[in-house]
Image 1 (tube, helix red, strand yellow):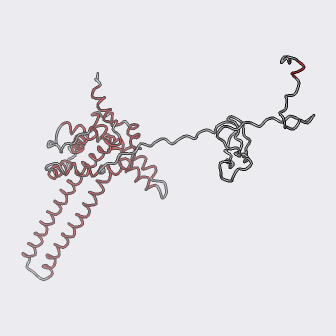
Image 2 (cartoon, rainbow, N blue to C red):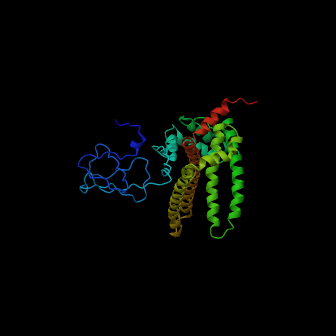
Length: 354
């Protein structure tokens, strides 16, 4: 009987099956090949175990009998880093789409003006009021008090009452803001104006900036109802950078358009006046009586006076219209690009003052 615990038996070689070649003495023992996973063809390339490190450029060799492109074809090596997985690059953050409005700020303000009943008569009256010193504060106060509702989401026709204490007060505050900003920009323009070639361009740019920045500060002052809010330069600068081109168009474009129209009308009136003077001159040169020539000259003088008067009224009404449209357009811009100002105004109203 053989004892399995016999020390003499432990070092004995394992019995060879019948028909197998006998092991050569002194030959090194070759390790047995790793077993292929189930479901892998016999001729397929050997797949390294998971977690095993592969040298760069490693390529599995096809087994014997593997067809090119078949199941046993070699798999292209995958680039691997000996230092672990490569860092994932930062993904771009989604950009919030900007809202698309059906109409621009200037067009919206012009529609608000022209849809109000009796707007032409109000423009003429406001224009004549604007020709009176000190009393012209009412024009800006009227426009600001009507436009301050837009950032809060309201839309009402132009109010009938124009001359009031509240309009005068808001208009005076706006005058103070415009005076301070104008002095600062005027000094800066005088300094940069001495720069050769580009000095005049820089001075013009500062003037345009002064116009739109004053309108923006005036709108905030009217919304908050306080003169001090009109000097919140930091808050105005923060919102101005969001769309300064739109603010420039809202604040400057109405004045440019109205000025161009009035220029064309003025040239037309001058042409009519010169054409009317041709008749009296021809009468005088043809030897007409002094009475008829005097009547002709007098009639043309009356026509010229009427043309000048109409021109003056049109200029006054056009100036008032440009001012109202600019203030209303800037209010539309604030409602679109600075909606937090409305929340600031509500908090200012609800906060008790001591």
